[in-house]
Length: 360
Length: 154
Image (tube, rainbow over the protein chains, first blue to last red):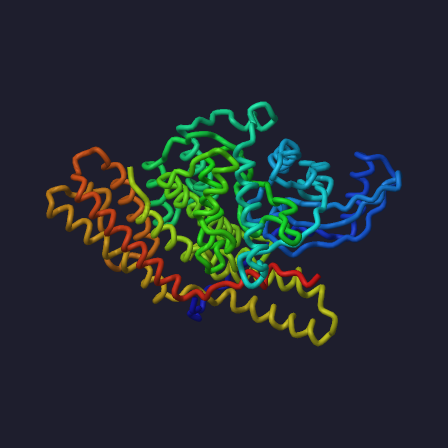
């Protein structure tokens, strides 16, 4: 961007609403009061620490010391009303983590409490168990593991997704999510969801996105099975300790859908760290083979190509939504503005994926 | 560009004032940052996206609208009059509106009178034009370093 200095008329710039301040001095006290109401007091809080990651939820680690003498190592996640995908609800994540608590091969944090009451701390929030481990990402050297460690993580990454998609949700609270959902309409509903996230129809989509939306509607496949879809399954959203995945994180986009959504999202080029591997971690063939072994679900290559387009559309919609937030002075994090500049690159990738995908 | 220069500058000023300024330890640093904020506030009211950049994005879209109109006319399948090629001097926003209308019309031709090879040709022309328009924008934007924006020292 090369700014062209041009004299404009004096334009009054409206003062934006005060930014959500997730760590004011009273926040620990508010949390303490909430926890005492739920667990019985007195409770003291220590080790308060905000993590810098993410542009959606504010993540804070702390310890809660209960009257029983027990200390709980916890994570507080607040849905920043100015976050990337605001407004947020804690309900999907809470229900998913509760339902998936004991699924073999699918480590998830224990979920404790949640509230949608924004009068308590200014935003909906959820309290989960703090799990040990670090968060490797595809960028830089953070995967930094030897070959046997990488292979172990790759296997666990594949197994966890297979376990999720094999989970029988029909007799759990997740069944309520299936209202109006059919194998025939899952793809179009997801397309509509992300078009809306990009501001459509209230605001026009960029031509490439508009084209993609029409392409997705015209080429939508029928799902073989409807499964719980993580919604943001990728390298960067799990904790690892050595060669083990200790928890799959960031479940706020969880929903029911076609399993190819998660397979395609994990494989987006943006998450590959410049490598040919999925997430910089695992070859696609190995990932699919292991996933099929664990889930019993076949990876349909034609559907995968369709969902690669849909997932790239979703990624672009997030960036577009971010750009619109910045323009409306509703972005609470300047990194959202930085992210928004990547929209053109994302749309070029969308263009390529459509050209290479099979058409009906 | 989906963001205005004013919006971007405002986001930067808010971040500097709200998240960085309170963390500074010295008077000198605080004074410097206050100066930066002041200058940014002034520039914010003077700047806009470079007209040359916007025209670079518009041109491929203008060209494809003209080319598609001509191609259809030559094949005996004219575009509906409400979807016109417009003028070459039209602003980017106007071109984008027309391209969206063309997209809608083209996808609605599935199973209608437009022969499949011609439809495929038009899709290819549209795809190439959108790619060219986006490439012009992308080439001006360096890759972002997200790891530095999300790293933790602890």
